[in-house]
Image 1 (spheres, rainbow, N blue to C red):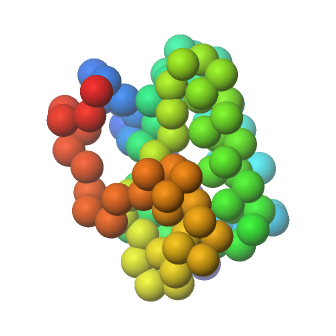
Image 2: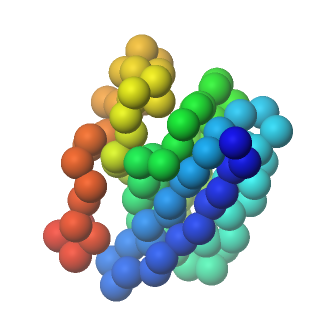
Length: 112
């Protein structure tokens, strides 16, 4: 399955929607999207994983790198919506705690 990333700008954050497989060949696309958003002044990034079917260590590294990048500007990157194997990888890696993973979809208006 192909990888896709799209984003929606909300007043207090940007919500990125990932779909397909996030791996060594597709993680650079995610990193480039995050870099562009941060360069454009967006500091709070909520990454929705509901449509992500696979994530390897390259994808996990892209999440951490994105959080570091947003954090360097006073912001953050958070994860939401993962299921199945993707959710399990987040739990095993400890990124669910590090990136304050929340299985339920956040209401962007409620996040400050």
